[in-house]
Image 1: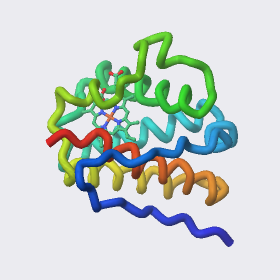
Image 2: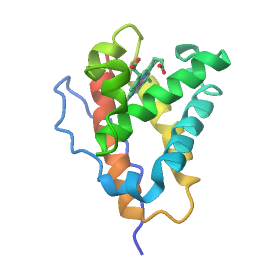
Image 3: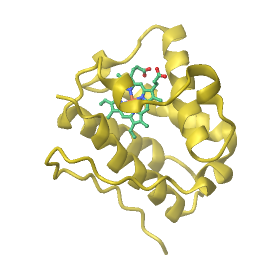
Image 4: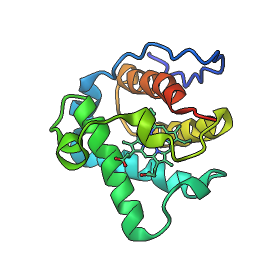
Length: 145
Ligand code: HEM
């Protein structure tokens, strides 16, 4: 049995860590519809969290945010280049600069993903682990406060 560990890296000396891309099989296994549902669930959890002030609340804006975020991950895992087509270069750090993101906000953001990932049914643990490891490390890049 493979156990999935939702480790959150807390040590951060300002030096950005190397990031390993998630295993593309995670996206292949879920398929686009279920992957988009996962991202949607994450945003719905964020909307009820202590960092909800950072995210869009109106339905239309929220749907757009969900779609942009899913586009990014899908492209990252070898799916269609939706993000590049709709938004251009990812430049994730730069795109997050307008928002105040500190370590605590990052932890809440990750915890919302932890809940959403734990709700997935019948997904091999090593694929969830690979996606999680990416979120854990890459989210350190988004800290700007
Ligand atoms: C693995 C780490 C992360 C990835 C891959 C990621 C990805 C994205 C993407 C693709 C967008 C849309 C950018 C666009 O407008 O085209 C976005 C927006 C945003 N992200 Fe992140 N993000 C990450 C971490 C975080 C964290 C830790 C926070 C805050 C705690 C955060 C807060 C936001 C906010 C406030 C927006 C703008 C509103 C929205 O469009 O949702 N992100 N993120």
